[in-house]
Image (cartoon, rainbow, N blue to C red; front, side, top):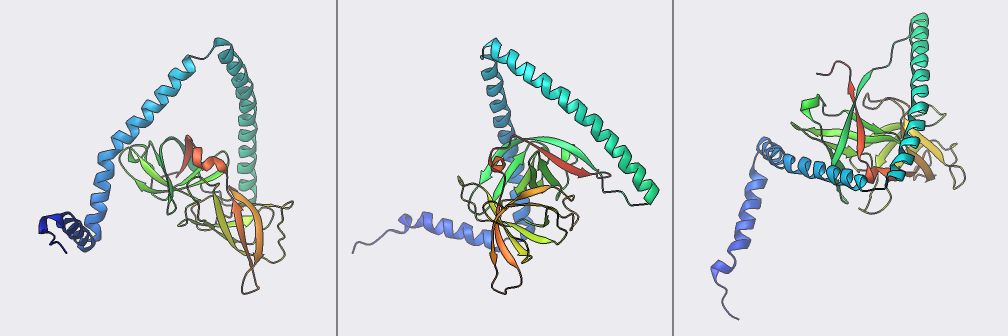
Length: 276
């Protein structure tokens, strides 16, 4: 058997030494190094996102004028319907405020809406997250809920100078208290095991035995408001299947999430009023 020179094993020894040093480093140093690396690479990520937007802009400029005219007409119709919806919303908010004053009810926690552009998506079997193009420069706090037109997107887990990381509800580390629409009994929702190119799903637990779910009788799962992170009434997903648990007291099942979670370009961060 030929003798292996020491310099041939040097790369493996160097890698083992670096791994050992990283394991022995304090958590504070690791967090600082990770944050510093993100701040160093964030301008590149944001620049790539803006270049992509610029490419989309010039691609639209090359379209025929007839398509742009038709798109403008459709947009005008949507704007008209949205203006009417805004007026109705203002009237409903005024009525809610009047009833709260008459009945002396506490008001719901208010939020300001911070719209943000998605700069990057990072999906794997271990985590599901996106990077948005706003951070401390827009007053976004850690833990803020993130939503879109289809319901809950996730929550902010890290905030940097000009960007923030949002963990999607499809991630296994996200747990949310929810209820079945029309019911008040709390359930437990958690992100499921989601391969990169598969439709996003989640898991629901502690489902009461009298809730029946089938292919033709799905149930909408919404946030309960418990825990103080997400306001009540936001869509989490659709319960498509349940089965009895091993204890026989509750059911557990599968939640189908919105497929648009993997292709979002714009999201809204709910920043509590009074948050600097």
